[in-house]
Length: 289
Image: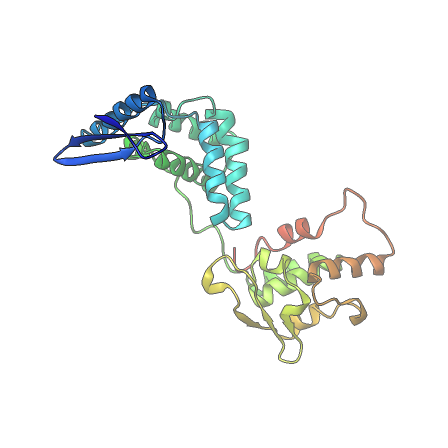
């Protein structure tokens, strides 16, 4: 039943449902709207009581991936987000973007893997892309329908190896003509710092008295803020220029790069190696990935 209540003439409804009296305001002075509000409230309770949910089509992968990235971005490291974003934008969406999520079955995923392998993508890269796809499907409760039939690529863990003394000498000799690359490789070989740890290292993280470097944000929580001793070759590699050019908040890579330009007297062209690309090439055989 509905009835007016109070000086403002607001309609309320009252009815019994599942042994409980439902007594709520409609917040309207219209009798017609009040009756409709009562019917909708009854319908809402009956739907929930009987576990009846309105069925809607799942979104396409393109829409679902955009929503997933926006949701996950605050919880991901910058580099991790960049990897996921590239996997979505450059590979998953072009291949599967127009499909509804429930149309992405094990066969479609297997075909995607075959195309990526045909494009010479590594097993690690393909698995990263499948992990992103898995998280998107999980968010929409659809991964369980395909997980038993999806096979991830086999990754080989024996690719990396420690360099011998002779190999280290040959590597340093090959880098000798490039002061920046030589300094970076020497630092990597003698500290076992990872590529990004060296690339983002600042002078403020170096303790010249104690001859140590304090690592900033690392790949793992245990590796962050660890203190690494500098032996003589590593220490010398950081002193490859005038101290006057040091700035506590400047990265070591940018300082060494500037010193290299000053010593050569040339400004690198657009085709010259950047510090990051030099680091990628010089440390790819280092001790840590």
